[in-house]
Length: 279
Figure 1 (cartoon, rainbow, N blue to C red):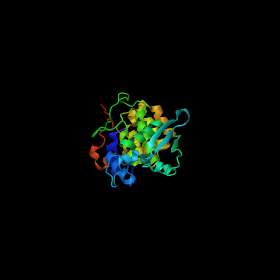
Figure 2: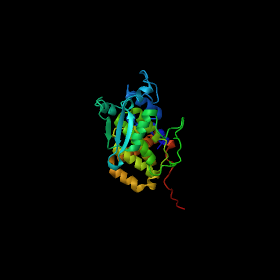
Figure 3: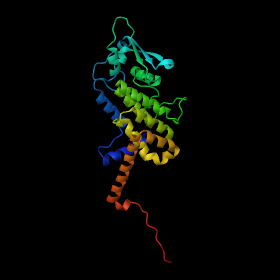
Figure 4: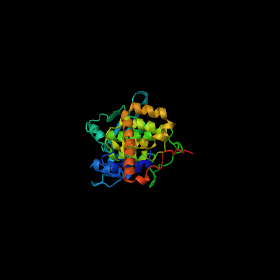
């Protein structure tokens, strides 16, 4: 996904101040910090205004059992309650636990193991694999991960972490997952798989991830559509909002070009009507 649509978004904002805007990495961090209020994680990146709670105090808190998935796919995980309670979702559940020796157990039947694992890794370390390389739009390399995301699996990994962070109320993890999405080098089919997930599982007002998707396809659909034309058509029919968002940006760009040509006619098209000779 990437950095290429940064310029497109800036130009769009100048023409239409009310348009959706993709947040840059710094903006995401700043925005999430403001939204998160006093709920910052103790070990996530960024300064805390409240007194720091010792790491030992979290490790000595009760251990909670998490049942992830259902049936044959159910997996048992454990985590310290002190860390889980940093999430408003888990804080409410843990508040119902008693000290009478009954099991501290939380069922997550509708969640997938990998994003939950990434969530727990973030709680304990402030990040999750693969990590971003400092000062670059790159993720650390893993021989088991292809350099080019042909299927969209890498994009979907971070998208699932993003939606899980939304559900659990962890804004810093949302911002981190969103920034990692823009570090993935994918193909047209991979981008379509990612766009389908975003338009299925995110709120229509979530411009943080939806606006970049629409901008990406608005500026590249004429070239990438040939690589996955049937998939692109299917996506537009399945999610009309996706098609509308892309079309809106295409038309906005066309209008912007027409305005520029009126203001600077000398920079317009150099094409002339064919001249007919009588000779």
